[in-house]
Amino acid sequence: MTTIELVQGDITRESVDAIVNAANSSLLGGGGVDGAIHRRGGPAILEECRKLRAAHYGRGLPTGRAVATTAGDLDARWVIHTVGPVYSATEDRSALLASCYRESLRVADELGARTVAFPAISTGVYGWPMDDGARIAVETARAADTAVEEVRFVLFDERAYEVFAGRLR
Ligand code: ADP
Image 1 (cartoon, rainbow, N blue to C red):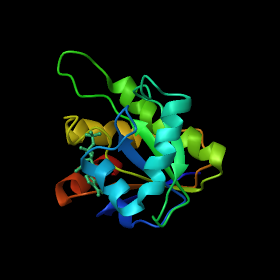
Image 2: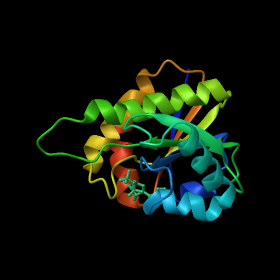
Image 3: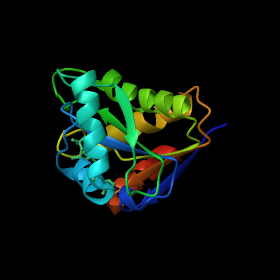
C-alpha cells in the first residue's frame, strides 16, 4: 500500500529517500524546481548529470523518462530526474506526464527508495494547467505498482496545494 501525502513548501527542504526533479532533457539544470535542487544540493548532482549525459543521453533524456543521481547535500539519498512534457493545447501529452510519475517510481523501486517526494511536474515553465497536472499525478501514483511506501507531493504554493488536496479527496 502506498500512502499519498501533501505538503506545501520547498521540495529541497524535504527529508525523504528520493526527491524527484522536474528536469529538462539536457540534464544540465534550469530554472524553477530544477534550479532550486541544484543550488541547494550542490555541485555533486550536476557532476553526475554530466556523466550520465556523456555516457547515455547525448541527445538528451527523453520526455517521460527518469534517471537517478546522488542527492548531494540534500537530505535525501537520491535525486530522480524526470523530463516532463511541455503542455500543448492541441496535442494530448498526458501519457507522457503520467510516464514521468510512473518511471520515477520504477527508478525508486530499483534503488530501494521507500519515501519519494514529487513536485508538480510540468506545471511551471512547461505550462501544464495545475488541476489537470494534479489529476494525472494523483491518478498515476494511486495506480502505480510500486514498493514505495510514501509518495509525498510537495506543492510550492497554497493554490497548488489546494488543487492537489481537491484531487485527493
Ligand atoms: P516544469 O518545467 O516541469 O514546468 P518548473 O520547475 O517550472 O518545472 O515547475 C514545476 C512546479 O514546481 C511548479 O508548480 C513550480 O511552482 C514548482 N516549484 C518551483 N520551485 C519549487 C520548489 N523549490 N519546491 C517545490 N516545487 C517547486
